[in-house]
Image (cartoon, rainbow, N blue to C red; front, side, top):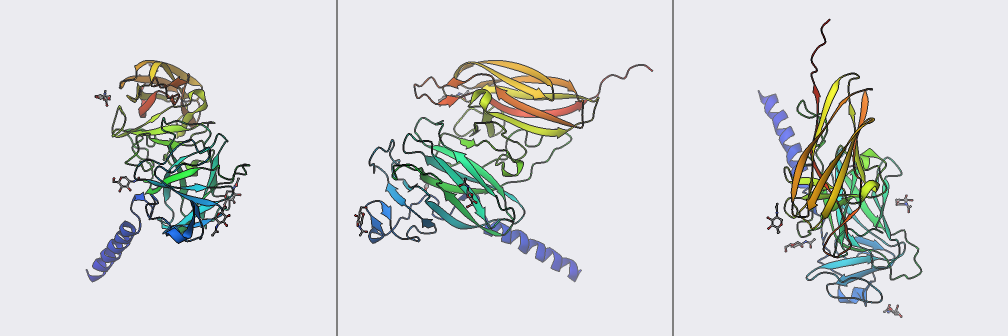
Length: 374
Ligand SMILES: *[C@@H]1O[C@H](CO)[C@@H](O)[C@H](O)[C@H]1NC(C)=O
Ligand SMILES: *[C@@H]1O[C@H](CO)[C@@H](O)[C@H](O)[C@H]1NC(C)=O
Ligand SMILES: *[C@@H]1O[C@H](CO)[C@@H](O)[C@H](O)[C@H]1NC(C)=O
Ligand SMILES: *[C@@H]1O[C@H](CO)[C@@H](O)[C@H](O)[C@H]1NC(C)=O
């Protein structure tokens, strides 16, 4: 009896420890509200490596307050907000408590400042795998206001890691370089396939942290590796991002979250599932629009191995969806399920921002076929 209590106590402590060591949300001073002291700044340039509370900086880093604008910077920091700008080879980093062995996703809001192709290099240290980093391209603008949120995923090899955002740029103009506005972290729950759905995370409910103050969703950037997906179970094996959206700011067909295929054929979402050859499966999903002024004729192509279906959807840009289905006979033990949008669509609000059909409620079931008479 005594022993059992001890075990329970230890388990509770471990659980409690996890609960207090990691909360989903902004990192410490993740919105850069606490800035450098006046004597640590020369204009906007931050002088000391530890001048921004909770962060460590290196290289040419500027601290920008709402309304400040200089040079050829194309946008201003929103009211009440603060941001840091990373010049060539500059970086910011912070030590964060994580859960060893588990997947996490980082969400950050950023904007490019000049016309150049700006990129950011995200990494966690130390991690056993040496090349645990990812390059996030920022050349395509998806939101109307110039700000976009991006997500990146990693598996923690230690209970505490150092998260680094680095601008690998070598622009001629040192004042060019992305602005970073907020950084948050989320512990991801491992997705499971169930009897009711052979697709993992098919309803897209598990995914990166959504910044509550932003109305533009979160971009899931293109990846090659599964283990960096901030959208558990899914791979974005295309050139461009897909957008993760929530029902607080968009129309979502099912539950609280869904994905918007924002870059035509250049953004595709896929998952490899275990199948039994010669068994019949039914893939069902919904295609709709996010109520974000994304109007026009849309087509979502779904693939299951070599089988495919094209689902057309007429969007008025005011929210809505239809259900679609693809029945197929598996030909191997692994079948790739993939979705993409056939066309590019732009918002009708003259912002020029890319948008597209919404995908949700993806479900795969094996169906019994009537037995043939022997
Ligand atoms: C979001 O808004 C809340 C309350 O207005 C504020 O405390 C927080 O700092 C904001 N977060 C960001 C990332 O701006
Ligand atoms: C502040 O920056 C200007 C321009 O880069 C430089 O000339 C000046 O020496 C700097 N001042 C200090 C106190 O570092
Ligand atoms: C990105 O950062 C990691 C870790 O600092 C580094 O090893 C890698 O070379 C960087 N990649 C690029 C392309 O700058
Ligand atoms: C679309 O958004 C408008 C304005 O925010 C709202 O009034 C309307 O109810 C939304 N439509 C749907 C289908 O949710």
